[in-house]
Image 1 (tube, one colour):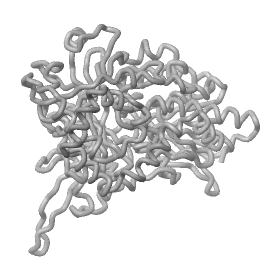
Image 2 (image 1 turned 120 degrees about the horizontal axis):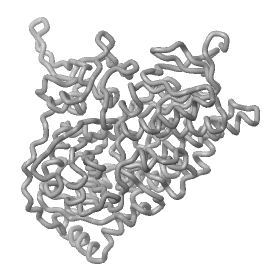
Image 3 (image 1 turned 30 degrees about the vertical axis):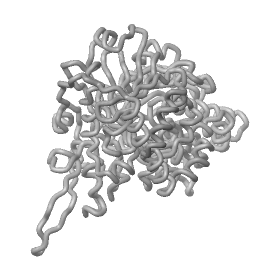
Amino acid sequence: MTDEHEHYEAVVVGAGPGGAAAAATLARNGVETVVLERGVDAGSKNVTGGLIYAEESAPYTIDGLLPGFREHATERPVTDYYIHNIAGERVKTFDITRGHERDTEWADAVLRRKMDSWMAEQVHELTRETGGGLLTGVKVNGLLRDNNEIVGVTCEELDPIEADFIVAADGANSELARAAGLMDWEEPEEWFQGVKAVVDMPGDAINERFGIDDDEGEAHLFSGDLYDGVRGGGFLYTNENSLCIGNVFHLDSIVAEEAEVQELLDALLTHPLLAQWLGEKYNEREYSAKLVPDSKKAANPSPHEGRLVLVGDAGGQMQAQGPIIKGMNHAVTAGALAAEAFVEARSRGKPNTAGERYEQRLHDEGVMAKLRPMRYEIASAAGENDTATGLAERLLDSPLGRAGVRAADTAGLLGRAYGSPYLATMMPDTKTPYVTLPTIIAEELGTRVADDTTIEPPSLGERIGELTYDTDVGNPHIVLEDDSVEASGAAVTACPVSAEGFGGGCYREETVQSNGDEERVVSLDTQPCVECGTCAIVADTQWEHPRGGKGVEFREG
């Protein structure tokens, strides 16, 4: 094989936080490393909410691996953290900053295009010194095998590359993870979908409206009845001169409720609570979406096969447990641990043991305990069933339950509960904590928000039209295998660039005539695709990434 293909000691696929951490650690240990990124620029394919954390308990942080990170790659530090319970125009807010600061060395708001591009420059310099480097516009589409053993990767734009160690840091839609049989797209309940708008706002306006200084920032979470019963919630983060505003919902709930996800975003943007921050002028820089793995159910406890290891979203390493929303920091830790495992395995003359060593490090360093907390396993077994949920719903909405909510607030228990990481890690994935409880809290304890909102969010067509695409004509990256409404109709509403009655999106429902009979079918146009991967789970499709440099290009991310 070595005589046939170019060989590197290590190949890292994806130049996000996990890939950058792995590549930097490998390069600093003298490992010949090449990084392959399918975007025209690092970050052009990536989306986050988003905050990046440095945990006090983590063995690695991104600023420790790449000095100068906070000065050059982030927006604002998060100095205040709030959660808002909403019922109509009534809102009850809790300050959960103290809970947010537990085990937090720092937390900064970021935009992926800016962040990833800066990281890529540092990584390219480091890996070039080992005889490698970083290449953009390269789509890795599969695993190179010899006698059924993984020995490298195959690419659309390059000849196959052989490697002693392969790091799949290619995101939630990782083709390498699926090719190795380590991850799948079978269960909607294992995934969240995030939809976000980056809203233009001058830094001085942010400071005035949020009551902060240049070196301060705020994070806000939203839950309650403004989402028509869909399980999930909203967020708002302050950047240097913009806001990130969006929602993250359980994908199975989006499908069950037949929710139009862009309309749910508009429901948040136009709520009176946000009027105090958005003002009268609204300029949306970018609309985006992505899939987010639910680590409690999707994180692979043994994320390796042969020479291949998975880090970050590719391995399901995204922690979303109530107000705890952490992913990029876990990707950083995983990437560095994976590299560390290979360096040790190589030094002992057993490079093929790197995967086992990586798995052990994830457990020894407590990463897997955070991603798949045992408390959730126990609580979900008891609480995630129709009987328990129905009982909780009836009790909360009874006079006794509402009195209990008022008493808990008087005793200060509600605020402490929202700020408790312990309770967050055992919160059940049911309607009760996402919709019913926040709504009742707001009804019983909330204050009416009187501000009038005057903004008009862009239409879906306008949002798609503002995105940048390099359409790969003649090479569709999604193929609809069953066009029946029964098999693929859920994509019409769940796809963030599609909607019922909207003719400019990816998925559309149509009625066709065949032999005198009418049939409802789904049609597909991949041109406006934002590559979130939602349809790979909710529709009968064959899905892969577009070729290197093709498809959507995010300017903010």
